[in-house]
Every structure is written in C-alpha cells, then in structure tokens.
Amino acid sequence: MVTVVAGAALAACGGAVVTPTVVCPSEAPVDGASCAPASRGGTCGYGSCQGRPVTQAVCDASSLRWRVRSTPCVVTPPRRACPPSRPAQGDACDVALDPQTCNYGWSDCLRGPEVTAICEANTWRLAVATCNPPPPTCPATAPTTGASCALPSSTPCNYGDCNGSPTTFARCEAGVWIVAEASCNPPPPACPAEAPAPSSPCALPEGFPSCSYGSCGVSPTLAASCVGGQWRVTEQPCSPPRVVCPNDAPIEGDACDQPATGGCSYGECGDRPALNYTCRGGRWWLDRAMCGDFCPPSRPRAGSACARDASEPCRYPGAVCGDTQLQNEAQCNPMTSRWVITEFVCR
Image 1 (cartoon, rainbow, N blue to C red):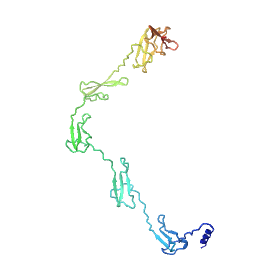
Image 2 (spheres, rainbow, N blue to C red):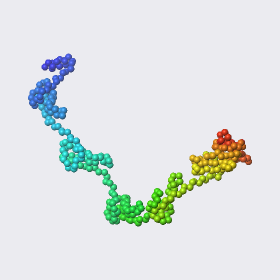
Image 3 (cartoon, rainbow, N blue to C red):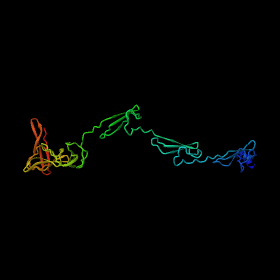
Image 4 (tube, rainbow, N blue to C red):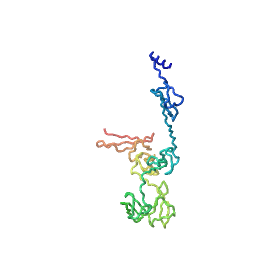
C-alpha cells in the first residue's frame, strides 16, 4: 500500500503515475483461485514449448480470480534428409519424417532433375522426366516395298555399296515403304591419290596412261604404270626450267617471274655480254658487265646500277617540241656506279 500511496502523491504533485507490476505466483495457479490486487490485468506464463508458454494465467480485474488456460505442446519432429541414392518405385517412406520430394540426376534438355521421388501415403512414387523422343531411324536392313513404316517422308534410307554409292533407296510414304534399286555402275578407273609402292597390286586396265607424282624442287618426279597387275614405278629426270628473256633489256627493278637460276644477256663487250640481268626476288637485277661506250638499248632507270666507262652520255628519245625530237641523256656516275638521267622539256 505504500507504493500505491506514493504513486498517488506523485500524481498530485505533478509527477508520473506508477503502475503496479504483475506479481506472478511461482507456480501456475488453479483456475478460479483468487488473485492479489497487484496482479490485476497481468498475464503470467508457465512452461515452454518451442519458446512459447504452455500455460497462461490472467488475473480478472472484475472478479479477482485467475483464468487459467493450457495449450498442449505439439513438437514437429525434424525432417530427414533425402535418401543418398534414388529409391525404387514403391519403396516405403514416412510422410512425417521424409521430405515431400527428392531430386536425382540432371537433364540437360530439360534443365532440371531426371527423376523426382515423391513421398505419398508412406510410399515413394517416382516421376521420370524425358526429353523429346529421338527421331525415328532407318531399319538396319533394307525394307520391302509395301511394308508398313513410321518415318517422315523426308528421311532417306539408303543401303548397299557400289564404290561408295548406295544401290538401294527406301522412302516412307503415307506409312508404306517405297523401295527402288539401282544397278552398280563403277566409276572409270583413275590413278591413286598417292604414288604406289613398286610391285604393289594394281587394277588399271592395260594401256592406261601412266600416273605422275611429285614435282621438281620438292620431290623426284615419279611415273607409275600398271603392268601385269603390278605397279611399275620409275623416276623421271627433272628438266631445269627454261628462261624466257624479254626482247629488250629490262630496266633494273622491273617485276619478273623467271627462275632464279636463269639470266638474260644483251650486247657484246669483247668476249662477254655487255649487260647481264638476273631475276631475283621477283625483280630484275643488273650484273655489272658493261664496257667502253656501250649504252643499254632502252633508257635505264635513274639510280640503277651501271659500269659504263665512256664519258659521253647515252641518249634516248624524249619529248617532241613542235617538229623537234628532244634527246634525254643517261650518264653513268663513276663515283656511285649509278645512272643519272637528264630530261629535256619544251619551253
């Protein structure tokens, strides 16, 4: 009572009202038993069931009696893990303990499990997921015309072999096989893709042209002939490529496609050519074999090599001014052994 009076006094003085705290019995009271005024409006809990009280006692403010209510504690047992291996259809399970569904395997086409095991009525039921059925395939052996079939008409079925080509053609039309056969027409005889070994068997007809293999510069050229059912292989000499020289001396640096071993000579210088050109790297190159006052038949390129020892320049037709034909000059510089070209223009 002191606490209540102190609370009232504080209220009269303008302080806060102190609400009586609930005083719960140490044990759950009996329903209908009297409760203390200090317990009015309070709720007392007893026992625990997964964190919640099992019994709740409330002090009724009007009758000052305990109202007690108890709730049975129902604890759900934890679920077991899925069986490590897939159960068989009809195996026993426990709907209270086993998971409702368990997945096994993986289907790439469905992007999901291949088999789902479902626990129903304490029995495992298996649900198997399948992709689209594979396309129908041709029979292993050629069917007969008129026999039933289930293939689409766009699926060809070919059988037999004639030098790599089929001899029997079957097609399913409106549920019935239609079969056509062709005679075996062998292709004409041909040379082997690779050079045969000497004295190995051959089947080319007598008089068939010899087969050639290899090329100069890579491997010896071989000629293989089928004689008496055996290959006769001989090596053919590799003839050097023939050099085709231009009619006039080329200009050094011009493009060429002659063999690297060939050269082209022009003019005379005693007992040797005045000019000798060699095709190297796809370009004409001038070997220094000039002498005296010999001039190239065509105007050389400025800066190309020269070995002319005459002081008089070489002259070549240039521009035409009115009725006058100007002459351009090519001088071999003895210091650099290079051609210097002077061109005259009309004024």
